[in-house]
Image (tube, rainbow, N blue to C red):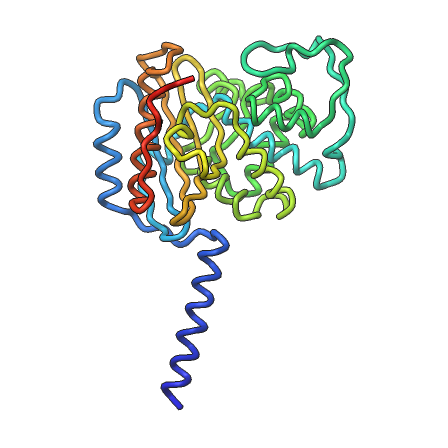
Length: 308
């Protein structure tokens, strides 16, 4: 009888563990010393400031370098803006499919497509969100920031979810000194990675909102960075941010052996060239390639050297 009861308990515990693994829910974090040493070797000699955070959701291992240091987000700030936008949608203050009219007074340079729209062109909110994330569109990002209630409203949502350093600075009253220092937005490698994990697990705004946000984040045009070091058959949610002195990327990989998330953030970079072999861009690809082969030993993959 005792053996039968013990067997039943073992089966029950295994079912609970299996369910957690299948759901992708994060396990308690423990530092992986070998992973930590490897990352330190990779960044050694980098000409600038660098922060990295890595976490494997299923086995709970993590590693980090300046992972709680604040870095500029550049366009990665569009992820918190997306969350703020869906907060308004969830409150029925906006509708995901509602019509919008573009005005050429909204023109803002840099990345994106909407700056090339004609004045009075009709669009909708879902298109704004998609362009903001997929093409890192600056016009739609500023538009979405306004629709979300402005930077202060987005920051309040970040505070609600326990992110104390992830903030929108631009066009946000009281954050002018932070904007001077960090630009449009700021975060830490750990916080921005944790935000993607929460979205992955359906914990941001609502399960339905998290589902839609995650789908948007898996449809990225700019895929020559960390994404290029992952097989194209493997889904990943990501966002990139680039300005002259700062390059950054955060990515959550739905890998065969279990999801893992990582972020690489840089600042004060000596190499400010806008070329493929920029030092920070190369670092991001190197970290991504290393992590794939570290976590996916049974699924080795080498990217093609030919670029298109």
